[in-house]
Amino acid sequence: MSTSAEARGVSRGHLPGDLAMWFFILAELSVFAILILAFAVTQALKPQMFGESRQLLNTSTGLAMTLSLLTAGLFAALAQEQIRYSRPRHGAIFLLAALLAASVYVVLKLTEYRHLLGAGLGMEHNTFFTLYWILTGFHFLHVLLGMFILGWLAERCRRGLHNASNRSGFESGVLYWHMVDLIWVVLFPLVYVLN
Image 1: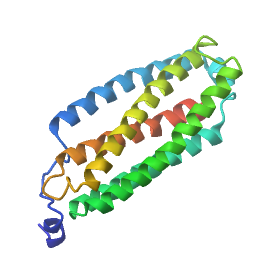
Image 2 (image 1 turned 135 degrees about the vertical axis):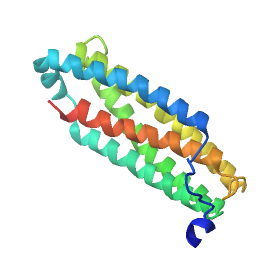
Image 3 (image 1 turned 60 degrees about the horizontal axis):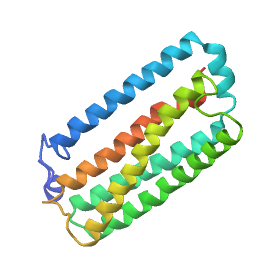
């Protein structure tokens, strides 16, 4: 093992976070996989409706939401690196930056939801929008939970409760956020781009 790895408290074969969080993430990914499969199959059955409905979404907004979530994920990863070096206050700063980036997603998504509802494109409009609201709404709830977790971790870092030897809970929270990012990276092209 290298000296820099030892300084960070990283051991070979170390799985970050708690095993329970990995099982939880696997369960969540399974639910999303079923919803994504339902969307893809329905699109194959009704390509014209999905193509026409997709034109009613703003791809630029979807891209901006993607960038905000990925930026939040980057800041969360940088925070985790600070914890590996036992610098919890620096970790808290990066987590606050992650929350700020994630807030951009929340504002954009709520604005998009309001616009769609104002245009009469709710869940009952057609099959595309039924699946759109289910998929993106379920993901939106995960983003809100992820932001709560990041905020809680930032407060614990501010109080110096996470460091290189006590980081499992921290890593679990960051893993959850990365799951949220990963799901959106799949949802964005599926819902906004692919025909």
